[in-house]
Length: 250
Image (cartoon, rainbow, N blue to C red; front, side, top):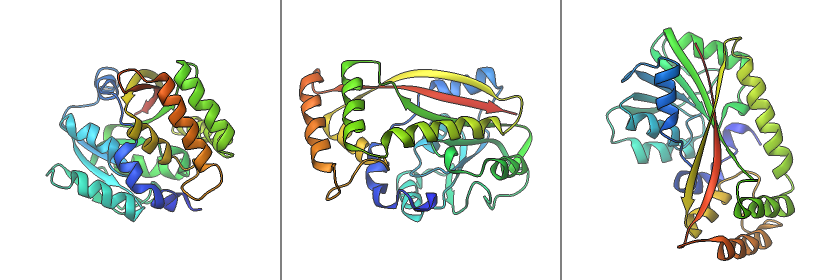
């Protein structure tokens, strides 16, 4: 499946249940990367607008670039009433945006799908002098708690593509970020996202390696997840524990 169409049948779960990103992302870019306040941001591979919303909330004007029509429609439905937001059709390698028109370029959770060298040239074309490129993604901490360890075990058991895809995507993301230049700066930002049962299940089903209804492994995976939730939940919630990987370069 082409990366630009990979999540078309998961757009609803993606929009409703995918994790956001901690406010520490913006705080770190402002303090450590001298990211200016209130500038113009291009969110590349913006999906349903999760990363766009973070920067809108912190006072930025955001242009979301997304090739997948179903995902882009979710972003427009959610954020389109905000005058600081617009969504356009484009790819990381061909955004269609004007030269030197943005103070920052962000990519969240999608960078491993890009052709890194072409994307890097395109990012620098649309950046103003002194602009910042920032790439981030969430990585689950499988060793953080009995719930996180149990969830990882279920995914390994019932999702044939899980282990390989997560490892490959992480390796591709890091390699691709390093291709952006010699001055890439890394940060790791831990955060915890409490989830109720429905949100936890919906988040799992938004992942491309998780079998959907009618596919092999779907029913036993969900049965195991519900049992895990019943065992580990406190006050109707479980903690999904992440490290947010943040890289930036000028």
